[in-house]
Length: 124
Image (cartoon, rainbow, N blue to C red; front, side, top):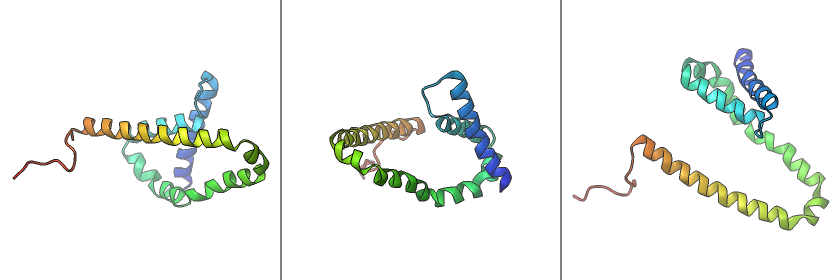
């Protein structure tokens, strides 16, 4: 378990180090996650090593949202004064997320060779 946690933290640290050293406008953990995905594809045995710990972290993922919720409550006065820009950011980011997710899904489907819609089939 400690070894699996160490693997996950090393990838996060590598991402942080690379983004800091190269002054990339990208969060270090995001780059670490990309590096981790590449490592999983390159060394499939790595997935078995970190699987239990990763599932444990994912089962408790909702706990990571508690600090953000506390921050919103702590700065409620700012939210009251800045509600319109916050609402705009939420609407735009939600719309962008939906569009990008749909485009990603279509692209992956094409890469996988499934070009027909699931509802389409040969007429019998």
